[in-house]
Image (tube, rainbow, N blue to C red; front, side):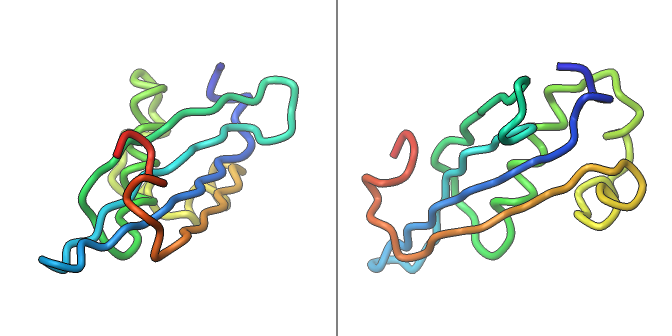
Length: 107
């Protein structure tokens, strides 16, 4: 896929919390151009993180898909408003908390 064809980034994550130590883990499914003919899906595997770390990690994966692009050269590209306002790319994200460890990808 070419960067100019990228219109949407949809991130659906699941979170599991290790009750013994209190650590949070997540995994996510990233869909580029959801519902369009050139839709592509990627998975971000089981990883440590809390809060909106799942967004940052998932967008890092997308960044690596376009290594020569000036679009992802700035550290500020992780801000959803910047992707929307400057690059016209809609970023939608959600996280389902309190999942079982086995529900996470590659857990």
